[in-house]
Length: 490
Image: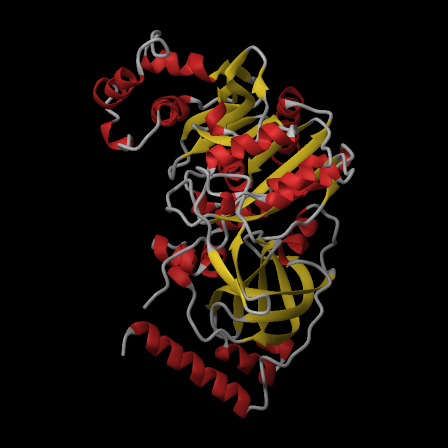
């Protein structure tokens, strides 16, 4: 029997002893009147006087047996406080129960606040009840988990053991709350649209498939929110947004998870300039409100700053100009064949350029591999090739491009946005080209909606997970998703 199994058996024996004594630790009810950390903080600030009574509850994270007295640390969402139990105060019967307690058990305590001889704010126990008995020992003796696989697969252990991880996810929640507040403040309407769709549209991606038994047909998990939100523009909802899950049956990496959270927002009578202002204002608002600063520091495991992102300065640059900086000033004057050769050989991107790549995809590989990773500071990359975004309007001054921007920060795309295509004839032609002539891939319902008339509009999509990575200094998307996708254990 290994050590863990031995400890589990010991804890089960303690549970059996409690039940023999007539105590069921899973049946007790207890109503705390303040948090553990809150009680400690208020006592230190003088908001609760010495001897003030509190009722607290939390998980036992430390336990020291001193014979006729016991010291324990209780922790809840608000923080930690020490509790002190004396045999003469609680009585022999209740004090004897303490020997059946272990780390990770939940305890409810009623008592008075005082300071120990070392100055530690503590609660002197008058009475207590066991609220839950943990049958497994805590991870890493509360010093944190080092096994990344365990951290992601059993995130609850990660949250128990690592205060910084818990803080990250609380901040993520605050970020999403402020995003909603921002759009509500600008008069946007929040909606929910279908996650199962007959035709996956709004992006070029491999979908997950499912089957609807009652309807007897195949459905797809959505890859984007876009086409249903535009239907609402047609219906007269002039400012609309949604925060929801998208699903793409593609690879996993530190920047990609098959299930991810997106914000999409559309504004009638706006355009890509309108939406650039929206993105910049939104990210500034969230950073300032949640983090209290526009200067984002990324730190390593030793706490050293290795990257600084300044959200007070935003640059605009054209896609073609950025490509020329890396691939040569003559890039758009040479032949497609020479572009392919230069990208593969001179720029050493051979393995990143598939034989079937079209010319715009070759240039796209140059941008993705050589340009985007260098864009650490906020940059709006504008006027992308028209082939990349068939749902956007052409640029009047360069019909080979569209009125599109990609907001790049931290070396990755955070938010695309564009002037929405509202010409139903032009839209059909461009979607047909993207579908390669396969009519079954066209969302006819969306095209019919467009034929009823959609106002000119601007739209954006923001990857919430990537935004959180940038704002919270995390280098892997798995560190901002509570339960990232993992291969099931066999």
